[in-house]
Amino acid sequence: MKLSQTDNKLAQLLQAELNRQEHGLEMIPSENFVSPAVLEALGSIGTNKYSEGYPGRRYYGGCQFVDQIENLAIARAKKIFNVDHANVQPYSGSPANLAVYFALLDVGDTVLGANLSFGGHMTHGLKVNFSGTLYKAVNYTADKNGYLDFDEIRNLAKEHGPKMIIAGYTAYPRIIDWQKFREIADEVGAFFMADIAHIAGLIIGGQHPSPTRIADVTTTTTHKTLRGPRGAMILSNGTVSNPAKKVERIKENIPTLIDRAIIPGLQGGPHNHTTAAIAVALHEASKPEFKDYAKQIVLNAKALAESLMNEGIKLVTDGTDNHLMVADLSSLGVSGKEAETALDEVGITVNKNTVPFDKRKPFDPSGIRLGTPALTSRGFKENDLKIVGQLIAKLLKNINDASIKEGIKKTVKELTDKHPLYPDLKYN
Ligand SMILES: Cc1ncc(COP(=O)(O)O)c(C=O)c1O
Image 1 (cartoon, rainbow, N blue to C red):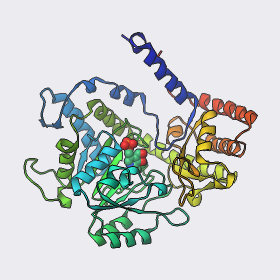
Image 2: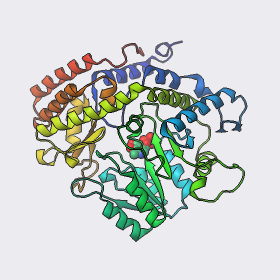
Image 3: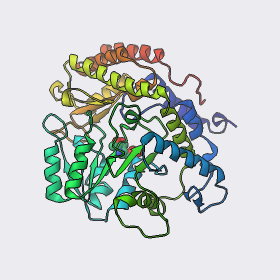
């Protein structure tokens, strides 16, 4: 029986969310729209199966097909990211990062990661996160223009002697120089972890250099620019040794240490429906069209950045090299929270964000973060993003003007009608 017949209440809620996605401009840079094929795999019978362990060594019977599904996802991940080993089981990005800490560090060890206000993720050493409570977290910031400051990073590394250095961000609009991090990590004898959650799709599409042969371990979510289901992967080099034998915490053993950290260290049964959907997303990402997609994400981001800056909106680092940008609204007298709410009212979804050296609090910071992966998946091109930039600027400068809001809503509708999202999908 269809969902709408068995649980109409829930079907209506899903339909409402579908309508919101269909008729709004989704500009949160960590979000995307998966293909119908990814959705089909994600909603599949893979969810019915328990398969604790790894292909060929499970704690459950009946795993002959889920073994093949997981092996397919692993093989595709290894090929596309050019690594020796891929663990595709982490439930999401945060648990993947937790697994790396668990694999490579002892509780109390020092970790050097970016401060949240400068684009870091909570799992990179925020005080209230496991990473800042169980480990001694030291945070680096950015220079006054918002760029990574390698002198500061090197000085902090030398002063604190971290066991692990983390690079990879939620709100950094520029290219990351992985090699510089490698050098600093080598100078102080630290492991180097790259977190490419945001930019995995750009890396596959040739729009950002890859860290997978430079870092000791690379984590990624699968649901952002990679355009797969909510999930994650941990990529590393070396081989998996006998799982029954104790192994030393050295680089060559990272694949074994990671596998053990995931299970039995942290997780039980893998989500086989998600693994299946990751395999599909990786297949899609291996096609030439995906390179065009990644290129268009960046072209669109640059067009949006230019449009906002032409309207006098200040962007952190004065632009972008990737899929996102952070607008500093201080000079407009509008807070990030006010901007997020006002944009929501006209169907433009963004999130409030701190700016470097923000004088306001994270719950009501001075900026907003904007990105183009989701709109690019809908077929938006540079000229559309130019219009979107003008709409955003107009609203931010006239935040209480009801008639301007009505005008913007009309243009948002025209844009979303021009680029339909899931024309064949219906829940009620
Ligand atoms: C850089 C980075 N790492 C890790 C994560 C965590 O991913 P998840 O939300 O799936 O736990 C995010 C999510 O925003 C992220 O941006």
